Length: 516
Image 1: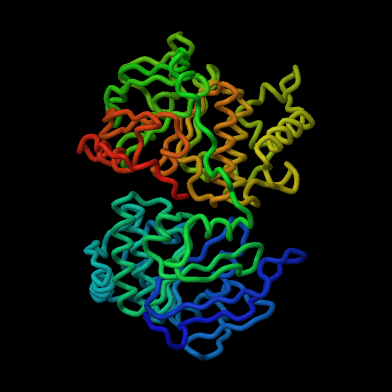
Image 2: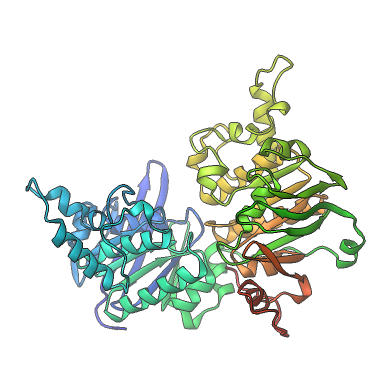
């Protein structure tokens, strides 16, 4: 890694949006051949800073220096010509176009010719993908590709522009563990070629495994920059939130009480004829039960089958010892079983609606008059009360959900479930894509609900979350229960061995404490 003139420097960058200050004198540098993590809570200024580098926003103050020369980046097209590529968290490709067309979209749009040599275009796309070690067919429609392959197409698109600076925003948020590992191998290859990589992530494990340096933004200021080797996850988190989070995970349920408690929810030999094959488990009042397993193992499908979003082919679901007839999700809600989808934007919240309408959407019986009309005062009171309980940060409950940070959108999704007054909560990736402070808050919210007698099921791809939060964990493999672990038995090795079909590994290792 070169220690000479920085590849990219930002000096005293400031940006305001009306009365709101997004950035206040931020300094940042990127070296050739390094992976530089940018960390911070939601709203800290990360996205604004990256959009300034990409020319989407212009800074109010400060200067940008690229390869030792001051530059004014007047738009994304100019950034591309300068060798700056930004891969957004939300993939921005055209699903109906081919891989090659997406990679060279700007060139196609700018071409004065009425025709295009697609043979040559496909060959160039193949070379770009080969640079990443990929053999994706350039003639395939992007919509047919996996999320990981689409992400690699985005990176290939950036590299065709002689990319010197590659910015990645939460690139592993929707990837499996194997896909993430493949992506990191590619990033290290690009690093070895001298490309400077800015890596935005909330995942401490990834930051410490792959980054050379880290810069922390808080409230629009850079509050820390240093070598990863010289810091710790705890110290980085303290810099991000401006305080010591103390107990990142809340205390767990008393083991003796859990044994004595009769099952709240019982699932027996449940199958859907496709992805779920004869799963049985029990959940007690006040317990947080983790469901772990590799992506594609059938974890989400199991939760969807329990709550009626998928039709079961056999099996039984009992609540308080009584068999339930759940044919659709409305039946599950009526019985007190609520499900939080892993896809917050598609199935968790109505982004274009106000917070208050989101919260009441599945509990209209609580806010309507005897003539069936929604009483806005009741709706507002319900949203305000649940927002206060969940420490929702917003300018009132009449604003649209899309104006909130990711962590607060997740709290709205949780409030929407709590409005139904559930006995059982099925939470699929409840902290995906939220910062460490919001994660800790959500963990404590779930424990508080469990302490109130709610049974909570947490599906998570983050093993430290399963280990740190859950009282017990089931591991699902190929649609079946591969094993179960009590809190004092859990380790990342043991969970992974069960998930991969290798059996249980006996270990004295203490539960992981990384804040993933």
